[in-house]
Length: 595
Image (cartoon, rainbow, N blue to C red; front, side, top):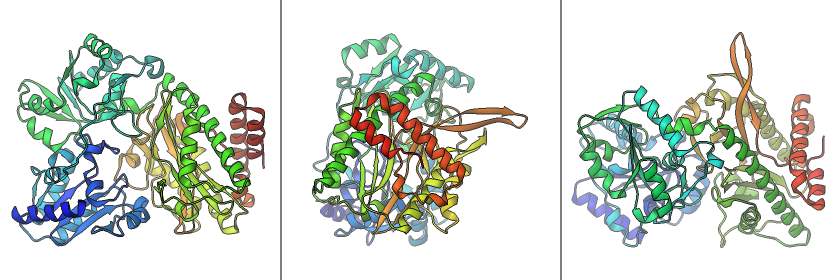
């Protein structure tokens, strides 16, 4: 059907004299992971990566994505009409440059304006203006072609108790309103699902791996309006929302509400997440564009959230230990479980832990050459069999009520080569360098990213992804704005780290068709010391799982790096030992032995 739909789309383009059509990956809420209803790009092209953009013309059918997905895209697009266009900079709109270079002056490019933020729209219009290209955002040409399109989900929302959040819904609303007043605003439009969930202490299951629900929220100085299908809100929660002066309105009612708002109101929006469609409807109100207030508040974890995060890490480590022991036992018996089997085993071990909800993203279990596919996802039918030879990369995470986890370990299943030990040790040195960093307040992600790459750079090596992303508290495993990136195209590179930020630390190295290496821990930014030069910050490591000692070329480590590794493994044993059986502890002690 998608190939037929591509032909039908091109017919529509020709009929309406449109030169090109753009299909992004996101939904109207600018989400990274989206409900099945919004997976238009995946449905049409067959490319399942979480980031990518389609460009369709009369003669071209392109998938633009970055280095994390090159190998995956080449495999998934091999038998179809779409071709891979390799972005050189992650998240950069290089497809817009291609359109400007290849379309004639006066051409019309179309898209669905609900899927583009105000910020994106303005950038595209500015670039197109240099060539006299028109951008028509009033056309949803794909929706009518998707005959079997899934419905929007109607899963019920549930309360995230203040035991986990540390702050009540009323307290969060009060803090937000204080910031709104300070900026002279009477209303605040919130489009991002994670921010709505965090602010209202609610969670849902509308999106795989992320406990959010499809909704919009408008917060006023006295009350708030939650735009959501009423069937999703249980009676008890409905009553609690009323007590906190949060009114319920239909999800589809957001358009009419925005169009009819009073001219006396001043609406605060975030141009990076408010859709161009809604922005145009807010024609009567005064609009103030500012920073994403909730996102900043949400990113700085409070004491309760940090406490529960640490508990989630301990549980997660126990589950991983049990899964890795299972794999070792299976291989020793001569069995060859598949990558998919191991992903399922990890999830099953986690499900035995308290307050487990789901995995936080599709597990990346990459055996041998599959490990070099940065966002590889094994399937039940096509995944490789794991044998007691070579290397295995395991990147996985879970959603617990008390925290979101994300961890990567690379292990040797047989005696590693000198080259494998070299590459692994360089990655480890970079991970330790970032873990050990002390830096002045105000330092941003671009500056810190270089620390993790330096050992690889010294050997003229590199990796084609960011070094780290923010992580939510039982929310998105990829939480903006903080993180570590080598360029300024995302907030991860430009945001200054603050105490309370939780980020991943995950340098890597990938040899196509041979193996991939990545080591990832979650780290917490914390205050370190005050001096005459101001406040200095550091990172505390949260993840608790041994790093494969068999892959380390010890002579390449400095004395300080050896000390860090031994201290880390000592803490892993100390924190996990009360939770383990005698056999499990024996396994952990061997994997965490000092070097």
